[in-house]
Image 1 (tube, rainbow, N blue to C red):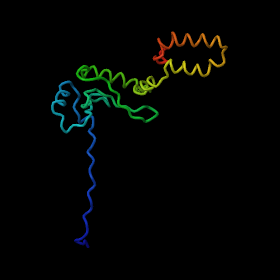
Image 2 (image 1 turned 180 degrees about the vertical axis):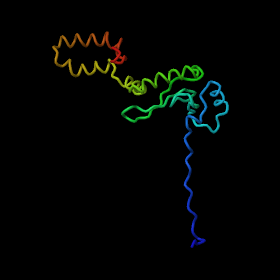
Image 3 (image 1 turned 60 degrees about the horizontal axis):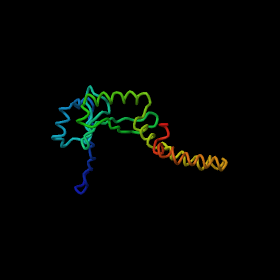
Image 4 (image 1 turned 135 degrees about the vertical axis):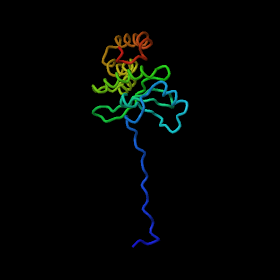
Length: 166
């Protein structure tokens, strides 16, 4: 027996289905122009369709081609900016995305490698560490000579350079 005061079961919200690659159109320059003219109702990143590259898309807010990928072994998802539109046309960006996808499939991480290069120590960092660790063990005249050479020649020329570049 149902009582009239009983509340009906609450409907669970339906999540919109993620679009499948087969259902999306292939990205072209004409499609990008149409997206930029009237992209209402579209997500911020419009991905490539059937016949395209998995994870390759166009980010509307800053007009860039992007490639989404997952780092092998770590499970970290990244979005790599391939290039800006209209300087990078669709075919050129797609070719670059294919090159990146091949490197990723071989275990590479282009976004992570760029971050590692930015975080690498500079020559100035290594000189500071050398002054703390190495110079105290040298004779005073040698220390004076090293400090002069470092301050006069090496730091002004190479202090800002990343150590892996040398």
